[in-house]
Image (tube, rainbow, N blue to C red; front, side, top):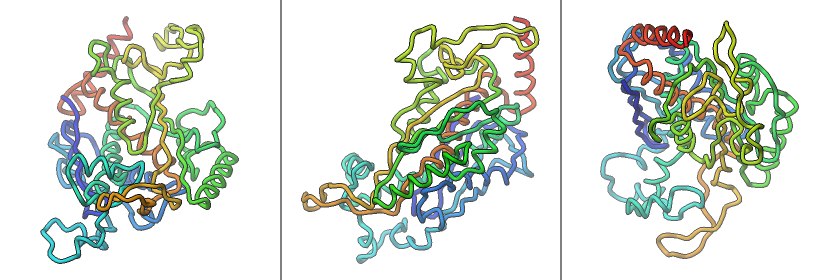
Amino acid sequence: MSLRYLTAGETHGPQLTAIIEGMPSNLTIDFEELNFQLHRRQKGYGRGRRMQIEKDTAQIVGGVRHGRTTGAPIALVVENNDWTHWTKIMNVEPMEGTDEEKRRVHRPRPGHADLNGGLKYNLKDLRNVLERSSARETAARVAVGAIARQFLQAFGIKVAGQVIRIGEIEAPPHQLGIDELIERTEASSVRVVDKDTEARMEAYIDQIKAEGDSIGGIVECIIEGVPVGLGTYVQYDRKLDGRIAQAVMSINAFKGVEIGIGFEAGKLRGSQVHDEIEYNEGTGYTRASNRLGGFEGGTTNGMPIVVRGVMKPIPTLYKPLRSVDIDTREAFTAQVERSDACAVPAASVVMEHVVAWEVARAFLEKFGGDSMEEIQANLNHYLEQISQY
């Protein structure tokens, strides 16, 4: 069995919709936890006014009955509260007169999909591009990932995330366990573990915002409890680290991804990079370190999965950049759409969920079954098998 999903909807449309196919039956859904994950995406120092308008909740309209999945496709809806102000502009029915022209976008913004999308789809109103290419779509992906996260939790797999850097401010390294990491970052406005770094990052974001600019950063996702053997080396497109990298790069504004020490490995000798193998009677095979971030040969090795992604500064600036009007082909300074000064803490939450989805997908491929009970039995058999290796 394989998991897959699709999303639909626009940033100022009535709702975002997602369909999940392949989730087994008898997974108990925690609705409060689902909406808590959506709420986490909306938090974070530096967010704009849109987050004051939207109070995201997910409504499940198919595939769940009496709190448990049925094995049928799961349908999720996240309503856009801002839709009430856009009913004419974003109406699906044909519009007469000038209403549809009021918010027509003909001045593409640097760093956005506006011009590329207009050229590709032959659209003269670039709103048709920005409405779908907006990061608002990640609300649907967090909802989908939150279901995958609950699936992983049922098998003892935990997911955490943290901010490593915002612009010039880098968080110091630490050795916290995953539970304490989750607790501390959840209490932080910028998802870091110490208050001094939090204060410095807040002040830095304030400075950037006052200058009419925006700032990006680096975020990290850690997943613990993953068994050996998810993914495989036998084909390029089945390597789990490669699939995770693609998922992270698909997040709006992400421009780079690394596993474990990542690019740092290019500066070091092999003896400083590879993780030595150990064996203990109680726990079996393990690694003395985790520089490779839980992967060897595209396959999990039983160590925590560690993934980092870099988010560029949001391109919508109150200090706008130069562009060209597609009607007149004349130069102008790009028009401003409502935006955030910094969305790095929110991006950390989004990355947790796209990585969780890929791990859940690989988990189900390995231990496939149509019900949670069947998957648990398959997992137990496998764990017994490798304990005897």
